[in-house]
Image (cartoon, rainbow, N blue to C red):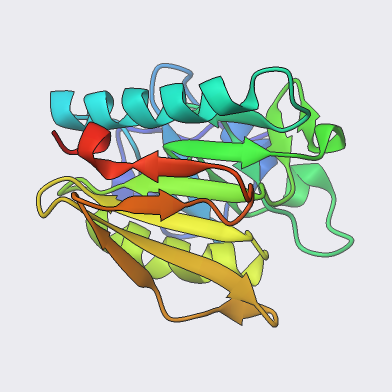
Length: 196
C-alpha cells in the first residue's frame, strides 16, 4: 500500500485517493477526501471557532442526553461511500465540526459510515469556500437531512433542509434569533448564546 508523502502536496493531486490510502497517512495531520482529492485540515481552529463549537456541542449534548441520537465533534471521520462501494474504496471522508447520528448502525470504531442526519460546519478563512460550495453539494448528494453553516465573522447561520432529494433555499438566522432544529421538533438553539 502506498504511503502518502505529506511533504509533497503536488504529488497528491496526480491520482484519486481512497479511505484505504487515508488510513495509512500520518496520524499527526488531519485530512479530508472529497471525490478522492485530499485537503489538509492542519490549521488549528481559532479560539472563537472553538468557543462556538463547544457551545453548540453543549446545547446538542444536553438535549440528546438519554436519547438514541448522538452528537460528535471534530476530529471524527465520516465516510460517504457510493452505493455498493466498499468502505476502503470510498473517496469521500470528511470531518465536520459537529454532527448528529441517529442510526447507531452507522457508528463504528473508525467513526461514521454513511450520511449523518445533521451536520454543522463553522466557517474559517481556510475552509469557508469549501464549506459553502463543495461540502454543501457533497452533503446534499449523500442526503444529509439538515446542514448548518455558521459564520462567526458576520454572526449568522445558514440552514439547509433536505426536501424532495435536494436542499431548499437556505434560511438565514441572525444572532438575535432562535433556530428551530428540524430534526427534533422540540429543540431550538439560542443564537444569543452562540454569538454573545
